Image 1 (cartoon, rainbow, N blue to C red):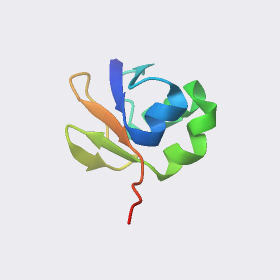
Image 2: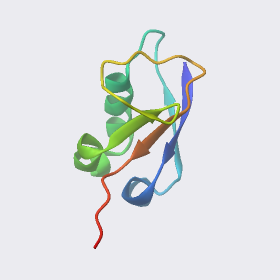
Image 3: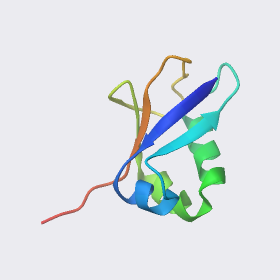
Length: 81
């Protein structure tokens, strides 16, 4: 399965792009996706651990299986005042 993962805020800044191309085997989970993105962008690894992975606009746990038609995004934690 191939995914174009949307990246926002600090993840976009650290990766230098607003998307990441990720290839995963059938049956892969959100956790597998998180690990693959961490391999592609080692500088973002710590941020990725604290980020939400959204699948089809809903927050997803690491054990959620992915489908080839899923829309996936990485949403880093937000701070403000």
